[in-house]
Length: 309
Image (cartoon, rainbow, N blue to C red; front, side, top):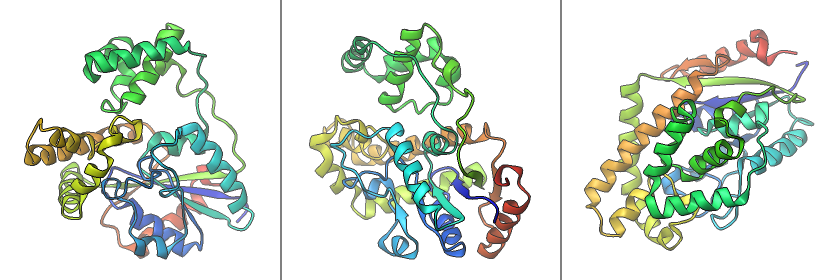
């Protein structure tokens, strides 16, 4: 092969990215970089659908439970660490696989992060106080007013993302989305996005099944252990915050579980909204046989202009 290629396996949550990534890593005799921002943390296992021990044994994985929720870790940190790792891996491999549902993290490695203006720390402090006193709904409402475009794609349940968008919008007096999609960085490798496609009702059914399985395997117990740290940014995520509400006595367990399913479905919808903006993704139907998938990806490596020198 004349060039080095990063194959990014993307798609909505619970659609089978882990299995496909392993399949491709085994075929190309290479390693996997996880770009799932929730799977970085070692204290969060069941609720983030971390690959099983058997799956981890099938192919070398990187960036799985390598950080603590007590450590600050940003998409910028992930970009730097991933590029460093790729530089090493590409010395011995022509292809590396990246797997993850966090579109921002995947795009950061492939295209680089957008540049933003400096922000007065007082703005962030005020927004954090607003979150504390008025709730996340107030941040959502303000973002919708200041930047409706970003409002339609951001994870509205993630206060960290909302505050980041608002602080930039306030500091620059321009929408956060104005600074997105700037000229991309040049990377010493090519990239190929492989998306797993399925009808929405299939995605939703798989999500509901996964949540039930998480509950059966101890998600509530995991949430109880993490409850003392519930205010950390890493835990402002679907699957945990709903159970924290139950632990606080604000709802029944049945309602909490139904909220996890509903919010995960909403998250999947936002993931797809993000991905559909990328017209370079090569989509593969979710039921495609493994051998056919490998054949299709191999063909894309030969013919796809984004994966060629």
